[in-house]
Length: 98
Image 1 (cartoon, rainbow, N blue to C red):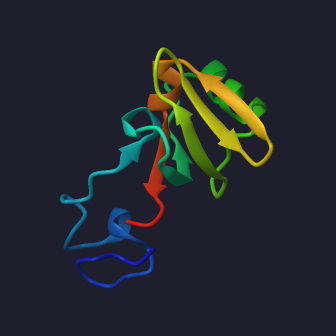
Image 2 (cartoon, rainbow, N blue to C red):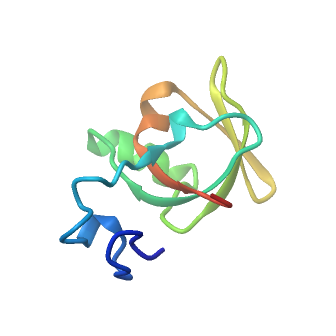
């Protein structure tokens, strides 16, 4: 993903122009039917990070939101995974198709 401000291939996180303008999406902000690619994991604790990794949520993985309430349910390939709000909020994604 190239930065929309300077064109850098590092994206807005490494952009000297647009770094302050980059607003990442987290999994908990997506709606049913949206597709995204995991960019990074921002877990608050080691145990939360281990849970995400054990569920197969890794950078580069593509997913689709099946439902967002009462728990976030995402499809990863042939598997569906349910996450609570805290875990879903620790998954930074880029929305596919826009």
